[in-house]
Amino acid sequence: MAKSVLDAGWFMLKTQLEYKSVATQGVFIEVNESYTTQTCSCCGCISCNSPKGRAGLGIREWNCAECGTTHDRDVNAAKNILALGHERLAVGITVPLGR
Image 1: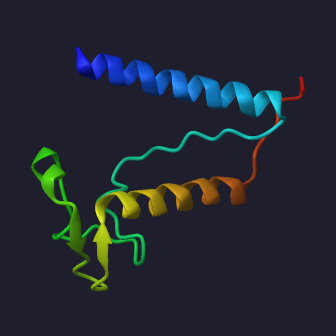
Image 2: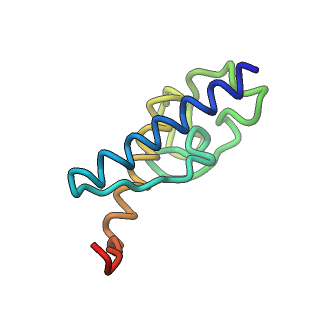
């Protein structure tokens, strides 16, 4: 039950963000967040030290085996999601002809 309530809450947040971006002629881009907590935001590798699966949910900080950077799980994911969004913006955004 709690998961369905959480999913409904995220769906409404996404819906509102899309609505507001259209109303202000802004851009709303949805990014796939898969592996954002596991990928090092500095070097881009998924090391053996990164938190994986449900067992890794308790791991809040980890060190990258490749570059040695210490990461907070949530901050690292936020940096990776931001970088994915910037990549999408750099490629360009197609605007439907009806606008």
